[in-house]
Length: 248
Image (cartoon, rainbow, N blue to C red; front, side):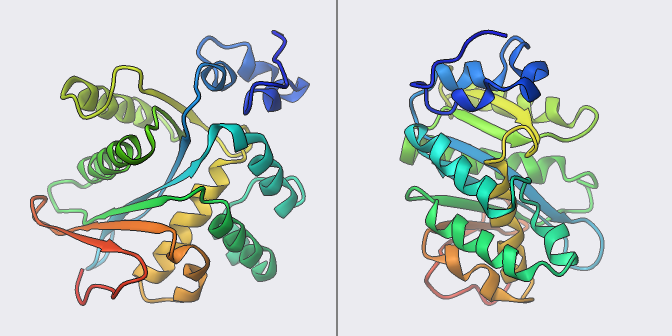
């Protein structure tokens, strides 16, 4: 396994025997961290595709490059070294640990979190267009506000990851993202920092569905939310901390 310098933020974590299969692959995450100096965007999703009010929402948690290792250690300590998965934690009744996780996300925002939410229409049954719209907003906004070029997304199944790559490639071709943009699909068990985005999107979903909005409170002031209407040309911009929209 190639040696990774501890002076390279983010990459040093992957110099572990448990990650050999990952770090030996061309284009692995450690190599991407070594070639990056800008803040990194971690992305996860939540959705409802059945019922009267369908939606697809995607979150981006931003971490400065030089703080990757420190924030990762905070995440690992939060749940005894395990990956953060808010839904299962809530289902298991681990409310104390989950509340600690939401507070951690609220503190470890490095200045900006982003959430995008799009209604899922009848002619988009797999929510491909809805997801692409969310990813477009998150990545272009992170590039504009933080010069982010590296995005780490929660890995999905089948050809879903390739769809994300096509979305990013299209944004590059259109000039919405730079040609230096890089995308990595992984799991929280590989990169625990994905847990930040998991907790963020789960917490916002509780707020969006009028369940328990207090789960979102620790990160409310540091999160920018964009809710798209059914007409993709009509979007409601909401800077969290202001009034919530009357409709969806």
